[in-house]
Image (cartoon, rainbow, N blue to C red; front, side):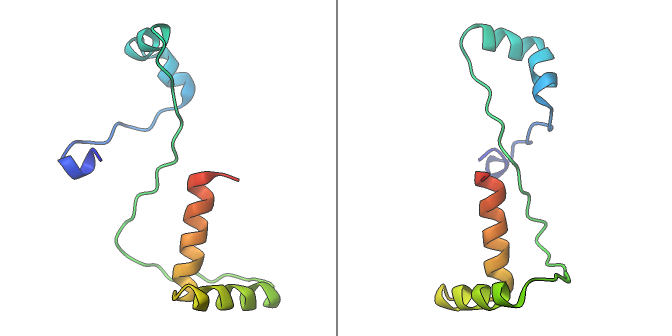
Length: 88
């Protein structure tokens, strides 16, 4: 990972902005591909959030969290991260 090697992450740009970049346009013309990747940066600190969920869903979350050896918060955070990173 770039950050692990002490390198700066590239700045976030839209697909249109990438295609307008002459270096990127040249690479694309030579057969390169562009992949849009969601970036989630952990801040290293937890923040309390108040959520409203259906009681049945909350019960299912608690059961699944327990089955995976996770807290409710960790389970919800993991599920949200997976949904963001993998779409769907």
